[in-house]
Image (spheres, rainbow, N blue to C red):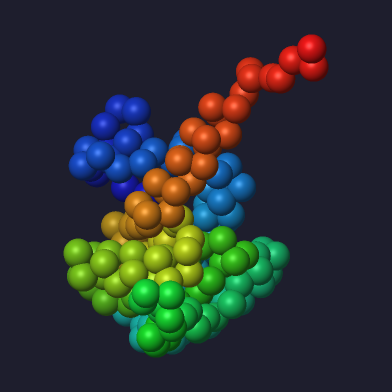
Amino acid sequence: MSDYGRNDRGANRRGGTPLSELDPALTEISRRVIGCAIEVHKELGPGYPRDIYVSALSKALTRDGVNFTGDAPLDVSCAGEVVGTVTADMYINDRFLVALLAEHMEIGSQERSELRARLRAADQELGLIINFGERRLKDGLVRVLNPDKLNRLRDEEEYEDDDEGEYEDDD
């Protein structure tokens, strides 16, 4: 991914989460997906319709042994009730979502918001937007995080850390 917008510690200048704070297994599988996307982009380049890239990436992920579900339905809940369904382009290893584009355009807040909403629906922390329409794929890669999920995970870790070092005396 591009280093644009990152400080020396790898964190996003807008207060983002560095990769080092994510589950290492999640980071590794996301790197494998990006590697497959890079190979597809090197082979095809920009300019094809989105469905060509979806098919090519699906085949590359399968060859690489990455489990995924294409066009994965995600229930959207409000006040504890399902109010509808959205679809994720790819649901990788039941761990994160991928949104695929094939347009020569900068990925903006609309695309990020849509993926973030899908992340909330799936209760996942990480998503990737991969835009095959860019001349250089690294210009079309964006990591999107679900702050709600990350905050819950941090709270759980803090709760677990509070218990460390404490013991009950049997006396």
